[in-house]
Length: 244
Length: 244
DNA sequence: CGCATATTTGAATTCTTTCAATCAACGTGG
DNA sequence: CCACGTTGATTGAAAGAATTCAAATATGCG
Image (tube, rainbow over all chains, first blue to last red; front, side):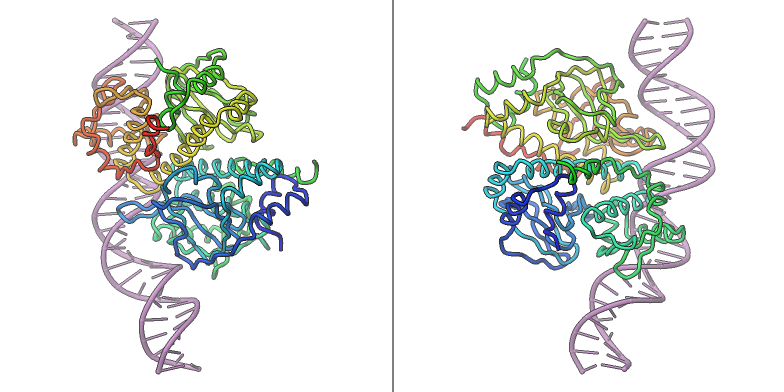
């Protein structure tokens, strides 16, 4: 199996053998494991390292005094948790495991050293961080401008594209380690309403959820429901892996 | 009057005379003007330059097929519109003027040259971009986790802190060139509901809007209503301007 | 003064939440 | 292998929040 970070970055840029070795060396530290629901970093802590998700699903989240929790971003295998927050003195949000998670920590100096030495990797990392920013914007649009069905549809579309990018979509479906409560925190609704909305969507044949598996029988249909436009994922240079 | 970008960056880091001259040189291009409601950059265009807002209010926004428009970020004097989007080939959102706006364009090579030459400025620009990212996250929380009163309260709190940082709060108030429709697009509500919500808030003495002026008689009270925590603005190093 | 833009209002509808209870699935220990 | 406890999914009824549509007022500007 491919190295998750390499797999991710190759979506944008073709990497040389040297580039790959540099990335592998960067991430050969000890692997850490987290149980589902465990916090990986908590708001208020001082970030010291960059974290690379190797397997499992994690999220960035914030909690309101009311107890309501909002997911701000989803981290999948190959995702970096903030490759630059260590510029700031304190975390303004938390990072938590949604499923079982394994990750490696990368020391900032090693990270910066590699950026200096490997321009193509650096370019790919820039792309990564700009796509993250674009994804955050799209989430704002999703919460501010769409109703329950559209929000969930959009989230699942984004998920499908992201998972496909890292080779984790199979037979029009994927693992879905999220409970309905987790989904509710992603889309800013209550779990009860997510439940009813999912039923509606199932009835319309937009998706199927059984066990921990999500199936999307007709992704284009789901995209239409969500007014999904994948432009913000900036995958238009995927071909770059074949040129250069 | 201070140079807007210098004023902004000095919130975080003390700049030397050299630093300031470099920033001034960077932004001495021709000044462009935009009328209220005019688009500055449109979705789909290829970004070629970095833009610095000199005066007026602008915003990043996206539009849904339904016609509904969502504001993704607010740009005030001293703000840079994406000092790095030119890495991506096409804009995935638009930038529009909310009031009359003046700005200067900065060519990417000049920008990068200055980053290479002036580490302290670079550090400040990093801070700027991380605070932008944090602000985006907070907007997600605002839309996903708060009701109408709280959302508006939170927005006005953020506004007060940002305007104070650039010296545009006077007598507990500020100019507010936004219509209720503009506000609705910021907080993801209809203008009708914004109208009713503002009336409630006025009745509770949380704010006052007359003409184009916003007054906040008791900011701490408004912060309590919004559960506002300014930590995400990362102003904790403001003192840095006096040390170093 | 008069048009154009912005704010305000009311009533009806739709969407979402709340609360409380039930049902289903799953893993553990006996 | 089954009872039991825990967690997640589902349901119903009622309340609450936000939207829609249409019309009426205000406000500002030329």
